[in-house]
Image (cartoon, rainbow, N blue to C red; front, side, top):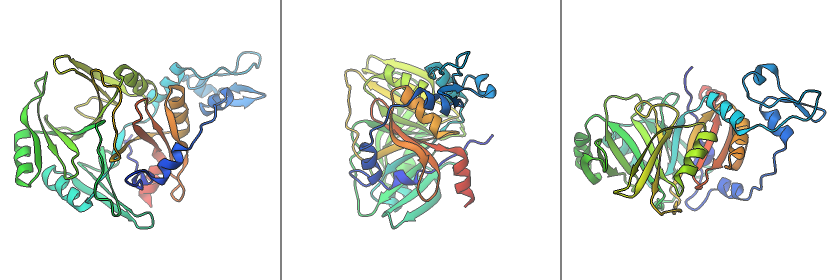
Length: 354
């Protein structure tokens, strides 16, 4: 079954300081979720206060059925929720961030990094423009969603965002091309600290860092988003249980006082992954206002929101359809405050057909 990619029209409208949706989300006070409601979302049928699970779902462990004799149903456990998450069709879809000169950034990404401009949309009534770029179609590849807000020329990237990763077959050759096009190289090609992989670092026109990783042919050249976290074990636990990601690998570098964890939905040589970095002794970071969020696919935004709540995440936008386009989404933050958005798979297909 094809993997699906979903747009984030609401996220792109964020202004430099905060979008209207961000402001609205910040005012949300989430109500407690009843056992009946939570079990019902996982397939149960509420009858006289008890939750009865459909047999087809009970067999799969998606919901807690009623006790024998018709007593009230039990709450969905973390193990049951995680089992459902593992069966959900998920992948990293696109990463959203803000730029000050859209045409200049598009030129850099296409000429220096070899990306293609997949589509572009202008929303004058909301005063922003989006551009989607990547190495393949949006329905099968991880891509970037650039957002230009009218009249905003610069943003604060902050210290929490790390870099994007791009797999290339020849790092030195790519660096030479970047230099020839006037790009900034902040680290010349060479082995990574504490490892053998050949890498280099460059910056785009807005100062976003890109790690060039020397790797053979891959179906997903746009391969990493690196974010810094204050408690690595806490972050790993959250992304495993709430997002259904796998811990692909973990590496400690005591000489350089940092530890990394690669999280994702498949092997990192074939899929985009989230690289979490913990710097010894650093518990919090300034996130700035440039980086926005990652989008992830799901078959059910309602169930997704409940699993996130169950595992300590904060829902910043209640699950439901977006006004105007009716695509169902839900938004949340992880324990470090990084935002993610889950978008309904089928709804996106409908958008593509319009």
